[in-house]
Image (cartoon, rainbow, N blue to C red; front, side, top):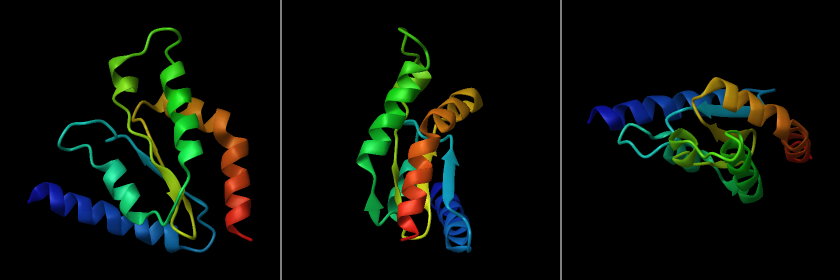
Length: 120
């Protein structure tokens, strides 16, 4: 099927990036909802060998709090995935660029710490 073909292409590209020397972070931007075409979480999970559930929870909190007291439909359907494939930290972030940048800015110290720990 077309979805399976797209999934395989995206997965192989992500693997290429994560295996490159010096790539500490692989981000899947968007396609994190519940539509049939929203496959980023499943692809990310298939690459991860060590989950980072606390980071996924923290990112989810940042995403849902982004709208203030109102949780938007877009942020409430976001599915967070975070973990390592042994070389790189892998994250899923919502497709809204301003929300993704907000999350990266707030989570930057933790992301850096995890990347340092992976190098040990």
